[in-house]
Amino acid sequence: MTGKGRFGIVDVGSNSVRLVVYAAAERNPVLVFNEKVMAGLGRSLASTGRLDPKGITRALDALRRFMALREQIGIETLVVAATAAVRDAEDGPEFLEKAEKICGFKIDLLSGADEARFAAQGVLSGIPDADGLVGDLGGGSLELVPVSGGKAGPGATLPLGPLRLIDLSHGSLAEAEAVVDRALGEQTWAREHQGKRLYAVGGVWRNLARIHMAQRNYPIHVLHQYVIPAREASEISRVIERLGPKSLAQIPDVSERRVEALPFGALVLDKLIGALKAKEVVISAYGLREGILFDRLDKKEQAKDPLIAGCHDLAGRLARFPQHGDEFFKWTAPLFAGDVLAETPEEARLRHAACILADIGWYVHPDYRAHYAMTQILLAPFSGVDHPGRLFLARVGYHRHEGRGEPEMLGNLSGFITEREHERALVLGLALRLAFTLSGATMGMLPRTRFEVTKNGLTLSVPKKYEALIGEVVGKRLAALARALGRKSDIRIGK
Image (cartoon, rainbow, N blue to C red):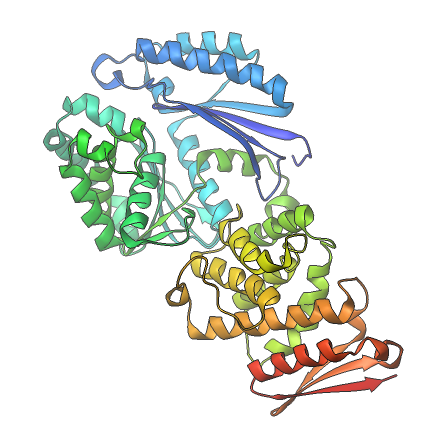
């Protein structure tokens, strides 16, 4: 299924009940509405075997509001999925019956295997080259699933969600530690995946990542594909475990409603890193809900590159001619050929993305276009790109408007990408700057011109019919591009 109508998912979890609404069921899921209620359905499940009474009331009230919002927002397709707490509770069927009366349709009660599969699929939809183990920490359970080569393997569901641990241990971290050690020790299959990356999903672990970002004064406030070295992730987890509720509540980057669960989630992360001998923790903003959405797409939509799809979506909203990107990609190819700035397939993919985004700042005041383009790209809601790749794209956007200048608005970002990537970003940005000047920001003219790159020179060949378009500014911008390549510029007028 791929449609243009709004697509919504209600996730009835052990800790929260959340409604997310996407603009459409497409490869790049654009979020248009997001609301959660911390119902705490699974708060007393471990000790009583039943859903929390107050949690039931809060969850059903949330569903009533979400069904009203369905009409208000105009959600064309709505999926309601329940996970560990409802699945494991004695009164789960009773709760489902009440919930389905409110919704007016059947709720999907996910098995542990379903939950693990969707979580892994969600991670793969946002990080297609993920290679390691997905860990999705919900309030009631932890899903562990190996991923590699774009596919998920068989995994496991463990009763290690923070709410369940709090209930089982009566709030004691020491008792919870024994539970975690025992559960992880039984997962002998996980040893096959030692030394790889751990892809962390879940609100508690995202809070840990925010704290780590704040400690480092990290300038790119995007959680998706934020990488934490395993040692640092363990260290910060142990610090969180030692802090009391009052101290945790004073940390600016910690959600007030995550304070109780955070030490227990930190404990699970620390123990999991140790058991897996993980080399890095990669935060994934995509998980179960994105996995459910991806599962509903047709094969053609699933096969799309998430980064390119996301860039096309952003350009479609902001650029004058969204189709310009393909022209720019072909036109700039000679600058990145084998004997110039030889690019890898991944670098070519990033160049394509940058070309698609080249015009997203056109309507902003000229004095602010460079910084606007840069920050829009740094913070854009697309996936399929790590933070160095995102910064490369942002720098291209900056140089496309500012030339050789250096951005100051976000501080010094030079240490986050290599010198080679700095050079590639500058060259591509200058080339795009020239492209807009030469073509008057219109379609169809650029493919009639071409670059020729020799050992010492950069020649722009232009048909005779376009000779009048070669003015002083075009010459200056071609010369600037040539200097960035260590060459001299020339313009050749031909037939």
